[in-house]
Amino acid sequence: MDKRTPFNVLMILADQMNANWLGCAGHPQAQTPNLDAFAASGIRFTEAHCQNPICTPSRVSILSGQYCQNHGYYGLSGPAPKGLNNLFRHFGRQGYRTAAYGKLHLPEAPRNWIADDVDVFGDSYENADGVFGASSFLEDLERKGLRHLEDSWHNLQNYGKPSIPIDAMPSELPLEETQEMWCARETMDFILDYIDHPFCVQVAFQKPHHPLLPNIRFWNQYPSDLELPADWDVCQSHRAPHFQKRWREWRDYPPEFGHSDDTFEDFVRRCWRGTLACVSQIDYVFGQLMEFLRVNDLEKNTIVIFGSDHGAYHGHMGILEKAPGICSDQVCKVPSLWRVPGLTRGGSCCSQLVENIDMTSTLSSLCNLREFDSGDGKDLTGLLGGEDYPVRDVSVTENVWSKALRWKHWRFVHYQEECFPGEDVGELYNLLNDPQETRNLYKDPSYRNVVEDCRRQLLEWLIRTRRTVTTQCSLSDEVHLATPGHRSCIYPLGGDGTAPNAAQAYNRSDIHEMYR
Image (cartoon, rainbow, N blue to C red; front, side, top):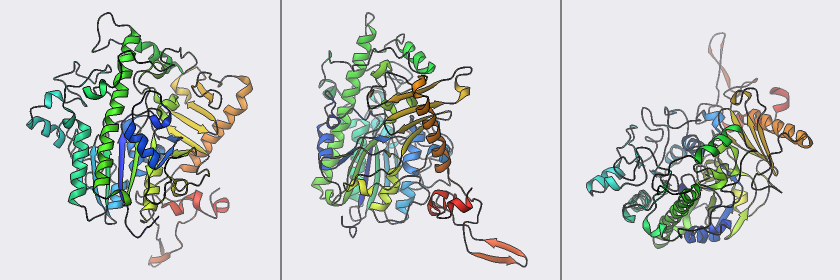
């Protein structure tokens, strides 16, 4: 790997994509030739996990490199965290041209969090001042007389409902005018405009998040009688009460695009067809971007990542959306494909636990930039180069009052007592012999020690990863007298106002003496 030539960065995110929905991941139905070819030229992480099961907090984690317990975001949108560092600010201050296009879905009040940190702010659905429905993408459709056919947002003029539909049908919007193709064109134009500068760009596709309205080309790639996921109608009585409730509710949900005599199976099959077609559509657009890099001789110095903010069910386990997502690997695991010129070995896989927050730290290292000193992520450079060693013992996905832990071959979900008053609710699965999470061992007396071990691991993680500003001792040895008799210390600060990574307790050599 030659660090003398600056690397470009192209991060491509699908929205709400299950890690299994790839041909290269062994899925028997998903038609993803471009992503499969990309995986064959790079590395696929088979145990990559998101920090939160919904969009905004997960995306804040990706760009800030921080766990939710540190950046504080657990819900959609919200006030912009002005002091919180992000990938674009970090790269922009070190000479990179930066841009973000697509469904960014970040804190936006009163102004979008990253709006002043990118050279081009290209959210598909809102402007930099947080006004929804005002964007270059939507204005472009308006000029072309196609706004009423827009198929990736709250479209009140077509496709049936004032809210985002769950059902699936082919879109009426021409493929070239879709959100994904708009993102690709804008990205290509930006790169060509700054062809002599290193760039850092995020492309955020809307699919395969609902609405499931793929272009007819991709809808027709899948038969109307395609086989459903094996677990689509498996009873989930072993799950937490809110999951069981949602499982029952979906069976009474009225399909938006079906017929009056449709069965629940018909509904689920149509949704599954739409999901796979949306995956194939983003695969097609991903291929357009990869071809652009090849034609413009950018492959040799561009790091490309394909991932997602979180996973989804879309029929798995009888759930048709992503919620309740903390419960299962179907939502907490995400696709993670990387290609780093001169480093990754084509067609390789890594089964070590990695997380979405690792992107910021790793990209800073690969691009030979200053340390991203406010991030919680790990540097995956060694794993990308083919080494095989654990970078962390556990992986955690968070909601406010529930936490999902991956530890060894165990999946453990903790629910705060207040979530289900009067009940002792939790989940424990042995993924080694129960990868589909069909047997909840939480209340099995023979696994009581494992439950306690998982609780201890979660407690250790919460303490270990909590960011501090100061601790018991001064964070600096530099002390001077500001006025007679008044001591003034210099306290180092990271990009978010907390202590930099080197000063955090887990990186201090005197931790046992000074941090008890």
